[in-house]
Image (cartoon, rainbow, N blue to C red; front, side, top):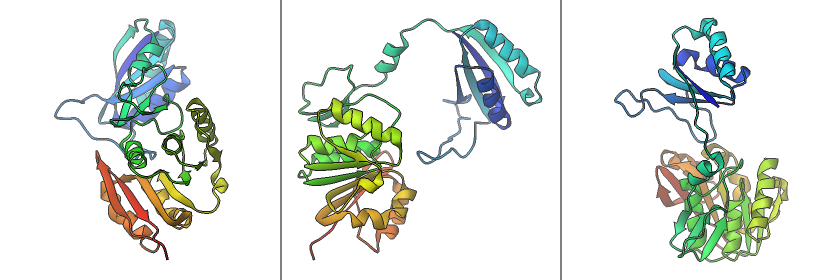
Length: 295
């Protein structure tokens, strides 16, 4: 395997990365060439949404090729293109052979939710203190326990009484539904609009020896003692009437995927239905909850 490294101005990033993909690069990554310096730039968007720009003013582009000849041919073709103006080759080097599976696995350690509740990849031994355990490997669906929004939802589940009926709306990997089942919930519905998420939730439930009712959103029927939704602020606002309609009298609504600066937006969106409060906060994210009081 060979690594081609290029320096590229922001304006050419899209053209260059698309060309590398068309030239059979195995992978293409883009980094800030000025990272860890005074010239470093923040470039990010809301999770699940595209970033505000394609790249940085000075972007480091790294492309992997299976063979040296392929990398050299790609470089020659790129250098002949008008969009390569302002770009520069930094290097073309062999990549040492490594156990990529082991290297990837080493990046995912057990995640502590509470001192007794852990998310543990299948290749790790459970921590000695783990009383409650979810076995979960990184996959295509969102939700491996590493993100603050997921951890806050799981902490809420771990510190409240087990509900009889639970709805995990936008279940992703199924991690919140599995957590609820592990903590004694009765019926747990896990719904999502993504078929890959439903497959992932089903497989993860089987791996953790819990039963989930998995399906598309229309699978959610009636009311629930706990409604969980860890998605993003915009869909949470749109879904306000629907999500609240599923909360039973005496039940709780738990929302995540909300940045701290979006607190007032969410309060306003849910004001016709309930009064949201901030129940937890971590790394710029907040968990908002509401309870449906008896009439």
